[in-house]
Length: 296
Image 1 (tube, rainbow, N blue to C red):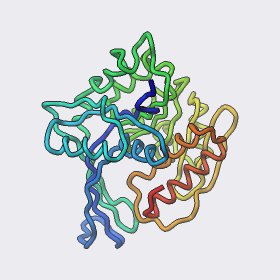
Image 2 (image 1 turned 180 degrees about the horizontal axis):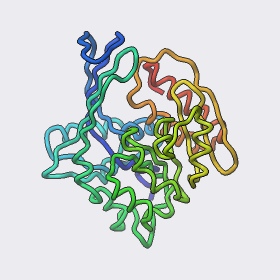
Image 3 (image 1 turned 90 degrees about the horizontal axis):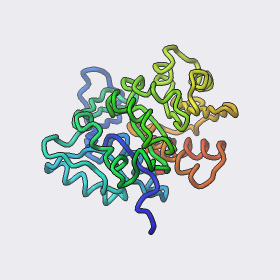
Image 4 (image 1 turned 60 degrees about the vertical axis):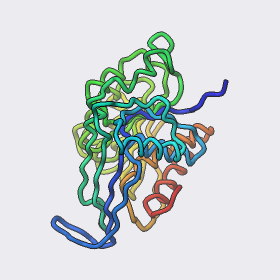
């Protein structure tokens, strides 16, 4: 029987409410622009991009049994992301994220992912109860995991037998949650996707380049680390060496979701058998298309 998915995306799935203006903005700016509401969250952004690249993602997350949740579930299905394993909560509302972006990038953002955190390990039941895996028969496919889960839950995942055979691709939800990924620094099957600031927080030092950051993460025990730095060099570090490439130059029109797009494009490329060099190039190209306003 053909599986209904080829990767699990674990983490935040919520409504993204994004205000964008073509002007440079600062604190207190009041300008004309556009406000959109779209399905978002790190896990959802990754899943949507994976779907566009021909993969079949399934979501493990918490969504409320409220009007916003029902609408979000339907939107997820229409966007090609599986919802069969989503934990539906009767007492927790559907999460949301609000951001304001100007011509000079992200001005401010607030992530309300409290329901996901409150749901805790309930979202992982399919990987524990035999539906998708268990401690005795671990899930052995791709898993994209985001840092919106609690520190305790991420620590449990890092040592859980149910995740021991998975190809774990891990990303923080934001710099503020980067240190939650410390348990995966010594994980034998985890690949970390971080930006320069997040790498600095994990290593407790500042870096001048993605190459230096990738090198430091490897020295701290990471099996593999991909470090982005906006329009500057991006590096893929493994025991075989550090590969660095420069992203294409584009006019930046949006930034929210760029890192998720990079990660998804990289996973999709590697699943098709692309080399490290080709996978990195494809991921950078996809991220560049995304930030310039297109759909990779």
